[in-house]
Length: 418
Image (tube, rainbow, N blue to C red; front, side, top):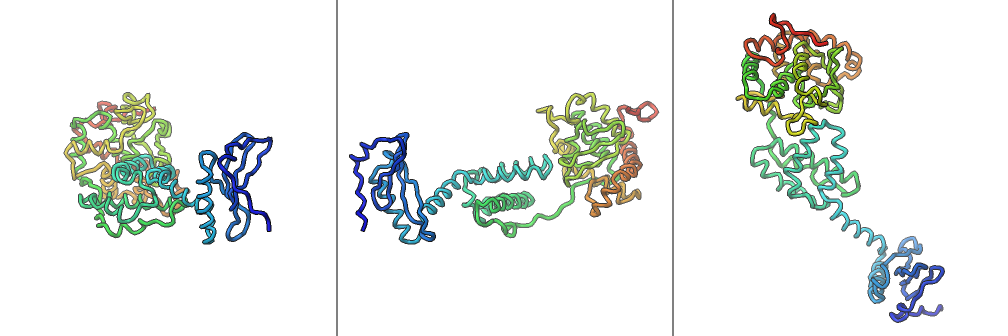
C-alpha cells in the first residue's frame, strides 16, 4: 500500500517559496496547493469524475485568502457530493450561473436584447411605441426581476389595473410583447419554458373598432376647420399632405426630402418606414407638389419635410396630426388614420378601381408576383385617380385657405414645380 500523504501545516505554508517551475504540494484527500513560479499559490481539488472516472482539477481559491482549514472544508463538501454521484465542479458552475442570472439576466436586460432585434423588423414609430409601453407599464415593477422569476400570476397582477381602466388594447399588446420577450429568453437558453404563453386568455378581449373617420360629405367641414384652426402652418401642411397622399400618420410624419423625386413627381417611402416592410411609391399630384413648395420655405434645409419642434434634426411625432385634429374639435369623430378611410370610401363611391385604391393605401397584394410585375404600371395607372382625389379635396376646400392652394394663380391653376 502507498504511504499516506503527509498533511500540510500552516507553518509549512508560510515558509513556501516560489521556484523556477510550478510545483504541487499535497494535503491528502485530493487537496493540492499549486505553487506558481510567480509566487502565487492556488488550491485545487483533484478527483475522478463520477461517470467517466477521468481526473478533474477544480480550483478552490488562492492562498492565503483561502486558509488551509477552509480549503479542507471545501474538499469535504466536494467529496460528499462525489459520494452521491454528483460532480462538484458541474454543480458549482450551475450555482454560479444561477447567481449570475439573477444579476445579469434581469427582465430589463433581456427585454433590451430582444428589442435590439425587434426594432429592425418594424417601423421606427412602432419600435418607439413598443419601448414606451414597456417603460411605462412593465419596467417599474419587473425591471430588476430575474427572467427565471417571471411567472404568469406576477404578470397577470401587473396587467389587471390596466384592464380595470378599460385599456384592453394596451393589455393585448403588452401580453404579446411580454410573450415575445420570454420566448426570446427560451431561445437564448436563459429559461426552459415560456410561463406567459396563455395569459391573454384570462383578460377581456378588446372589441374591434374602426378608426374614427368622417363621412364623405363632411370633407368640406374638415377643410374649413384645417384652414381656420389655431395650429402651426407646418402642422396644417402635415394633415393635408397625409390627406393627399393617403399615407399612414407615421409615414407622413417621417417624410424625407431625399425620398422626393420632383422630376418624376413621385415619393418613394423606403421599406423600413412602411408597416408591411415593403417600399411604397406614391405619384404626386399638383396639389401635393404645391404643398412641398410651401414646405421648402419652412424645412427645405432639413432632412425631414416635417421637422420636430423640439429637435428640428428629427421628424415630427406621428401623433402630431392626431392631436391637432382633437384640438380642432374632431374628438371621437376623426383620427388622423381615419383620413385614409375617408379617402378609400370616397374613391370607392366614385367608381375607382378597388385594386388601385388598395395599392394606393399600401395594403399588401396577396399575389406577390403580380404586385412586383405591375409596380411601375400601377404608379402610372394611379396618377389619374390621385389627381382626381386631390382635385376633390381642393373643391371641398373652396372658400377656405387650403395649404395646397397657396401656390395657385388667380385663375385657380396650380403653378407647376420644376
